[in-house]
Image (cartoon, rainbow, N blue to C red; front, top):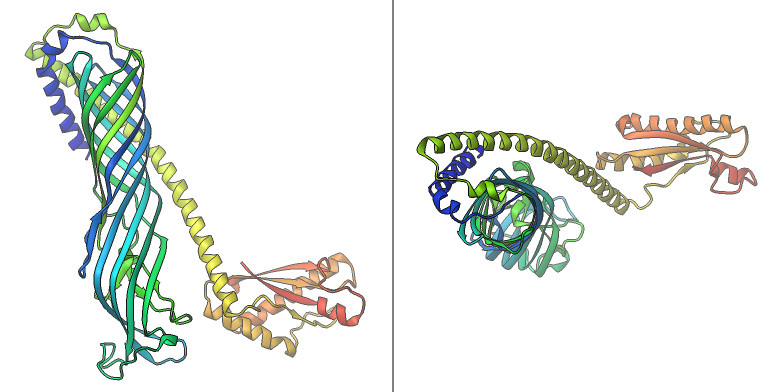
Amino acid sequence: MKRLIFIIALGLFAVSTIAQETQTTAVYQQARHEISIWGAGGISSLQYSLDNGGEHQIGFGGFAGIGYNYFFNYNWSIGTGAEFSYLTAKGKIPMVSDYYQTIDNTSTTPFILNIEGKDYEESQMAMYINIPLMVKYQVDVWKQHKFYAAIGPKIGIPFRAEYKAEGNITTSATLPVNGTNPGTRDRIENIPSKGFSTYQVSSDGDLELDLNYMAAAEAGMKWHLGKYLSLYTGLYFDYGLNNILKGDDSDFSKNFYEYNRETPTSYTVNSLLVSKYNDNAGEYVERMNTLSAGVKVQLAFGLGFFDKKERQKEKPATAEEVDKIMMRNTQSIEQTMDRNTGEIRGDMQKQTDEILTGMDKTAKEIEANRMKERIMKDDPNFTGTIAGFDLSKNEILPSMRTELDRKVALMKKYPQAKIILEGHTDDLGSDEYNMQLGLQRAEAAKAYMVSKGVDESRMVTTSKGKSQPIYPNANGESRSLNRRVEFILQ
């Protein structure tokens, strides 16, 4: 890409040499530095092809940004900045027939879920922070007003992406014949309690997208509104070069319509971008990139002007002088591009690492909270205590084993879950003694769960001693209830 930009820039410079005689007869001042703000709108689409009879519709949006431009001379400059882009798209599937094998919530007998869907429509939206690096050429065409053209790469950092979907489905089930192939016998229909009926479904959720590498170009007119102010109006075209769907093959194996065993009448609709069809026969979307084109308006503030008298002394250059000028400017362009590209890459890598670290941390927190919700839904009393330890002892009593076994079963069911075991005592004895005794009781509960097959790395023990009684230490019974171990989900 860098070599392509260099070749095109060199070609534009040759065009500028041909037009040099005309330029020297109409000379105007040019700012050395420009600070700009811009906005653009038009086609701003997430581009993909839909398999299995789907239809993709181009989306509209735009971008806005701020940047800096440095002029090497009257005609050539290089610029960078940052812009916020908004892209959309829509996918439609008029009719869809899907099936896959699953199990309902009342038995362990597998069945084939048959789905007939229609009028499915999904809209996608993505926001990116783009970092452009553009080489620009300008030439006088009318008084001080100029024609300009610019090319270069852009790198987009994903900021946010989501989808919204809705449609209608009719579902039924058949018992499998010859393994997992759909059967034609014992068809089960119209049992709404098991999710076999006609439904209107809708869903929304987040999408994970990758960095976007784009080739960008624009051209138009530069209108001088005063010594320090210019207005650019033109057309732009940005094309994404890489697949921005993030993940490997395992991340694109979700069922389009997902059967929920616990709530059969509530179907989950996954995005077309990450779904398979016909029991993993294929993916709806294999690749997605971006396409943007439209009108751009840019307001530029100039600083540090060229000396107008030097421009007036210029004469048409000879062929030998043109060669020397081209060589000198070629080296200058290449050196500046290398230097700025290195600096921008460093800044972008740092920003990208920070964003990805934050996204990874947030994703882990969200996943941990969802797992806690599933565990508490499965067993609302999971965080219940075991209480009644003998005075000054830490042995696990037979009466505690049933509760501990229930927690062991849930820890095995949710292998990613981690817990804190917190030991407590009554008010008899010193603070130091009770802190140690509380820790010993938590360790005893942990040792029991390890003996039942729970990995000890998933459990952390701590002690509160006698600092947090749940009952007044007024008599032997309340003290017994305070001698306990609590279980806390991390």
